[in-house]
Length: 110
Ligand SMILES: [Zn+2]
Image 1 (tube, rainbow, N blue to C red):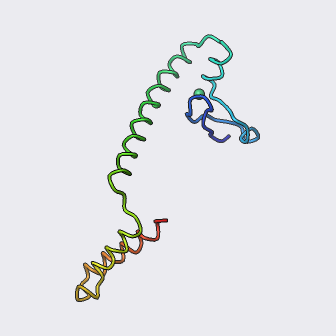
Image 2: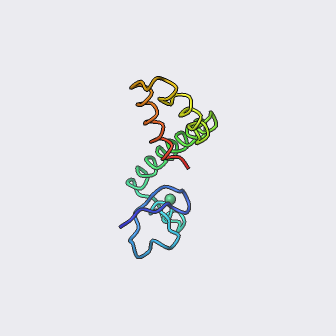
Image 3: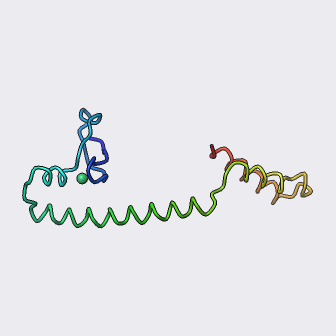
């Protein structure tokens, strides 16, 4: 069993691995698409569904705001490495530590 995003609502739902390559929908969306009545359990799940949909939208909006506010890119890290390089700071432990940290950070950037 793996998790795929529902093609209708986008929330993750379990799918058997053999069906993983096909577009799929969650049980709630499938029932709604077929005109089936939702049980109380379905309605409770729908409430949870709505709750998490709102949460995801809030988190995505916050991530967008963070990205727009100026993320750290490779050029900025290179600039910081030059500014705090141990050669410029009498080889102090702080400059070595900061440079090592920036070098590790740079490896994680594209
Ligand atoms: Zn769905």
